[in-house]
Image (tube, rainbow, N blue to C red):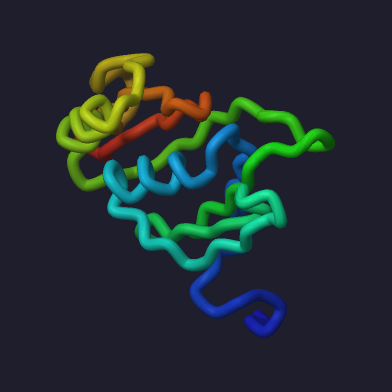
Length: 128
């Protein structure tokens, strides 16, 4: 398969989040998921026209909203090594609990949090 059609180190699919405060979302992702910032492209008004962070093997793209592009509440699922510890970091970073980590009918233990920009992060670890 050709690999020259996308940047090296990028997956074929990447979430793109439109949020009210991209800089705050980046800080949240760094604190909770150890995200590494790849780039920021500021708009003339100081907000972020485009930004990218890497979480483990995935690039998450995001931008501040504009008059033409409103906040789009999203749900993102992310596998982490320790769902309980990540859930607690998210709460400490100001996220609102959607669901405490719980083992249900599949092989994952999963919980959910909503960040200040309205994105719901479903956090899971494979446990069985």
